[in-house]
Image (cartoon, rainbow, N blue to C red; front, side, top):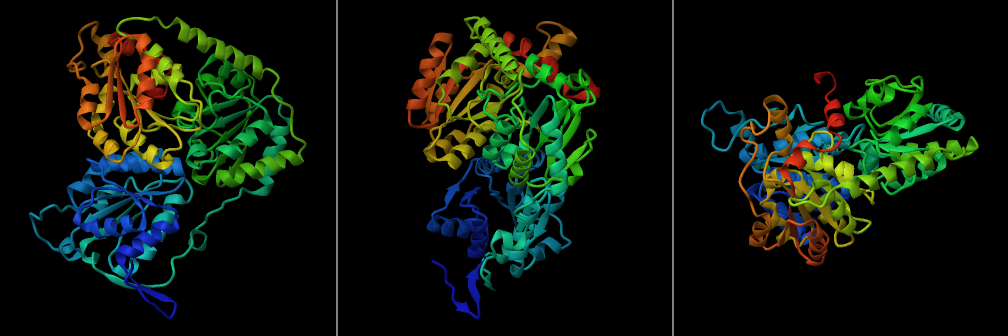
Length: 574
């Protein structure tokens, strides 16, 4: 396959082959992007090597697919964009990946370096691309000379995966399309970057002592538990401590919501646990606005002098949003086992006595809330979420997209697996369908992927239904259909009164028919009793499926649960 030979320990190879070698050393075997001329040789060889190649209909969607693939595999992902407009289309996904701390490699094709340096006007499909990405990327590298390919890619991986993970940008000028190199064997990741990061042993011992002596400890699990795929060791620690576990919106899924230790943040049971807590173990979270920085709202009641232990990869995040008593800086996959061993040496601790009562109260409240959701026409959105969730397998990968839909999902949806994907930090609309595609590619046929999305969000990248059909991905998309920008409705209502909204509502759209046009399975549901059977048929269809559920637009927008909690995330602005 490669035109290469060995000479004095070095290998002659094409730059195309070398890029693939470097990616494979990091465990990457999937490439997202449109096969423009700059990467056609890469696509051709990657296919020969058995890679999965996915061409989206929009580069941003490809970036979101790579984002989800990375989250589900724990590996960096790659997406390419064609010079000029193709690279520009990557920008939304790049900014989102930066905010969501996902290590995506954005490979930007570019015209020749000679043209790049010329002082001329009117260059076609050209713009100085790196400067537009610099603010969002952890690293921006340009392959000025073919011989730089190793060092540029290694630095990209080093930056993307060191400290707080994040996206990087590599520019690949057309000068190098046919370049040949003489290179040494590809280095293993541990040969050129930090792949393990243990916390200071003395700090670990102090943290273990605090937890062991605590009367009522509490765990707050954040995004990094999911990004690190640290679910197994996290569960071990949670069981060892035996205390309540809360998750941030980005940390949802760190512990399945069916777990007896899980309490839902902002709920009455979680409030009781917070008020009583004398030690908080925050793991992989910035303790941001959605957690009220650990200082206001739910945190300024009860035992307000509680101690804080913070497990975090990036030392620059320690002590910024609130004071920290014991910082544990390191990789969660290394620090959590350290803490488990230290707790074991400290003698462990008994399980929290009031936790079963708190958990029972929470579950009783949720059951009552679901039962109280009326069977109406149009359908009550909370009832819709509950009915859909009942049909899904236990290990379903859950994807969430949309404004009000997300609030209904958070209140009425119980996540029974460790995998819940959404734009929890950036609040980016339109990520849902690409996320579902990326997630299904990552899990293959082993598990099902279900997206519950608002209809406005669904339309951002609805063309990617064709991608799902082409790649034979049996994703199930449930569309919460109110024919409006639901989250924009309350602002008009509160400020101007009923029926005074502007450009919030739009015409009826039959997404089930659109799905059928793409070759997917489609159903339209307007009665509560039909939701379960429709989802079952969608699961059994063996191809991408869209179930459109007509919900009450007034209830969806004006009665969305936890609205006051959502508004409180904006801090002093409200």
